[in-house]
Length: 186
Image (cartoon, rainbow, N blue to C red; front, side, top):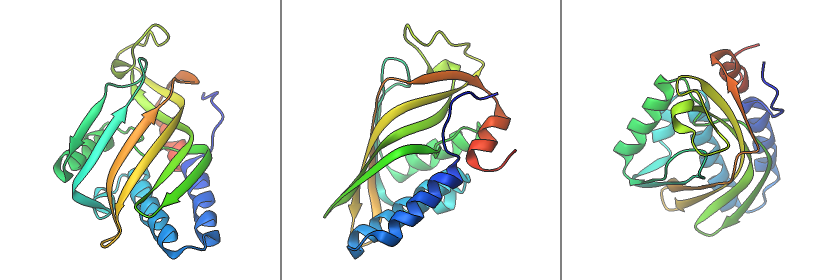
């Protein structure tokens, strides 16, 4: 049973769709629409949908913490395709729910800060505070800022640069909890 309190992905999506309707600047609205399509493709494990939103040279950078994940610095659609397929196959949540979100927009992209929830295999958790079972799945709640530069001529994401903060909560989880948070379970 999950004790972390958070939205489900459909609840997060509903808030973003509501925000889109309130954005006056058409460029900023379009960026968020593309970003939402990308994120929702992550949630529902639709690789085609995800890849339709990115440039061929998309940059992925993950700046984790000493507890969650090693750093990532890669730039290609092939890397993205393989990364997402691996996560989908493992039934993880590359697109998980988040709360307390705040978006900021500029001419060339958007930034999101919020409290995110993701699933990590124990083998990816480390540091003094984690002490995980490498075979167990863990639900991790953490603050994060994501910067997404855009190619505004083609309305494609040029990157996802993620700065994760120290986990607020880490607890064992299972596939049923992952399905529920994605919006596909009880």
